[in-house]
Length: 169
Length: 223
Image (cartoon, rainbow over all chains, first blue to last red; front, side, top):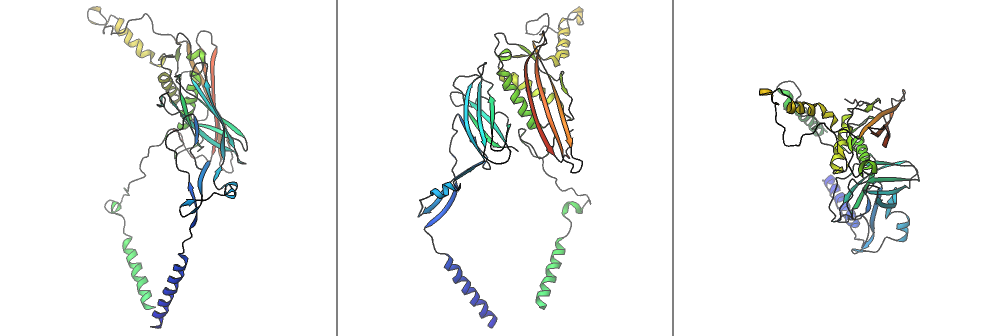
């Protein structure tokens, strides 16, 4: 009988303790992944690997209203952290009229990185005109740059491109 | 205390009861359980079985790169009269320590280039020469009834001779190997060169190179 009473008392204490925790804080710190942008942005480079580039839109929310990130959060690298960045992307025509595109990537880390790139070419109507190219590997020395370059096989006017970059596997 | 011991005993008995062999071993004694199912993998990505040799992603990547480069070379892809090109493995040599069927490289290059060039380059099927000659002799010979050819001329206009090539692909696969005997770690550097040769003058009109180095504790056999 005494044992049952002890057990009941323990349960009541635990219940009170847990109920005490359930206070609601109006300001919630949330870090959420940046939502995917619909559609393909032409003539752009997309780093698809979150291990290379991870962008967060987040911070402190009060009653559903976002009031942060603060300057400290941005400076601390909470909002955006990246291993590589796209320095420059250009395109021109080769002597045979095919399209040549390249992008210069910078490795911001202190260790060598391997990345892979592939490209989809589109015609002036934004229709894919060739198969996606095969993944090409690019070596990025520490704190240095590397160039991913690719040529189209067609020479249509008004072509555009879309490059994907991922970590080398 | 007695109750606890009883519960433990009952649990043990129940567990032992569960440990009967699964149904597929009961009848024959042979374990015929389903193995790991076959999976499709992307040829452009290293698969589950990967070593230090030349693999599918290397073949796809380098043929793609060479194709784009050839189509950007005016002497090959911007002539008023499209050149006749021969791409096969006849002069594409494997001098490496990697075991590979060279045709997987040259076939992929020829087929993709033929599809992409869209008439800018014409491809002569020299590896089909005996097939063509056999048919031509059937069309022109006198082995049929009454000394006539065995087959008729078909619908394509007859030509005195088959096409000669302007350029032909040559190349070489070479490797540099190193093994750490203590750790078993092996590394292999592959260098694959492609050269397009003018079949009249011997001039090399285009060159391409693709190289890579892989290292692993290699226990993969390439067959």
